[in-house]
Image 1 (tube, rainbow, N blue to C red):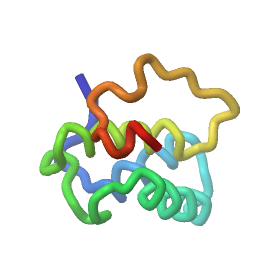
Image 2: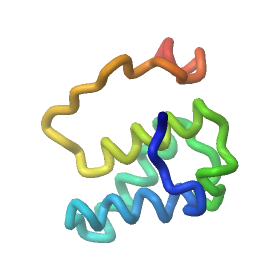
Image 3: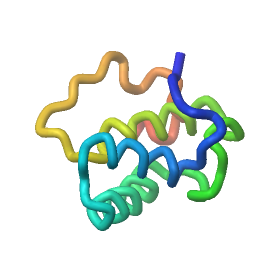
Length: 88
């Protein structure tokens, strides 16, 4: 199961997580733009609840990466991702 707030947009969700990590707004914005492009996320104003399962998993990955962790341990990271992204 993916634990995301379905009533928030991608931008709101990433900004929320950036605040949890006490990141400056400019850094959150920079990382958000990079992750949206890298993970091929839908438009920033799209609600999480309107995304496909694969898009939700990519959004969840963006939340884990927004603060640029030194180490990130993922359990079966490609399960549920779109086949094109699995190859990348």
